[in-house]
Length: 225
Image 1 (cartoon, one colour):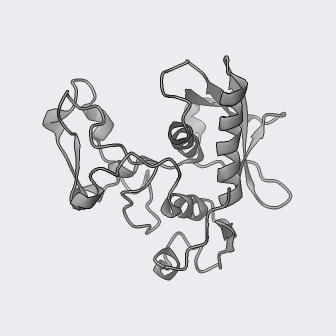
Image 2 (image 1 turned 135 degrees about the vertical axis):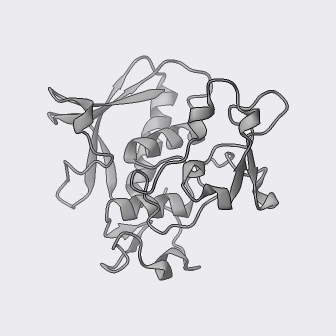
């Protein structure tokens, strides 16, 4: 799977990272989409199920393209491993605007990237992203983010490219099938959602993640299916 954000009669350079052009009557942000290529019924069901999970836990909804100018094309190249819960959710959250967790500018406090083990031609995939291009919204680094690559991503045979500073997470990174609470929190803060994972967020909590009381609370609501 891959996606292409498209705007009719406009260059790609005009695009913003977030989808803030369209809202519904409830104030949710809408991502218009069109699905291209050949899919089985089971594949489409899984794709739509993952879209609904994002919509149920944030204020961002996927909606089939009507007459919007700005939309996303979801294209199927029949790549091996594309249609798993993890790969689809990782893919959709990239569309929403989340960046790879291990590319955060503060990542060196939490992981070690073994550049010597990266396959030739893929070194650029591990370059960090500045906060200007990928704000963290004060959400802590998350080993369990679905946006985190695994230990041997793009690794030479028998090696690892990512080593966690906290060793207990070494076998867990890149293995999550569902978004973490922090993944959803980041989306909610990115879009200034009034509710997140079924719980109301106050205006103070929504000020670009400056309320660490909310972000670090142990009273985390259950994610909605």
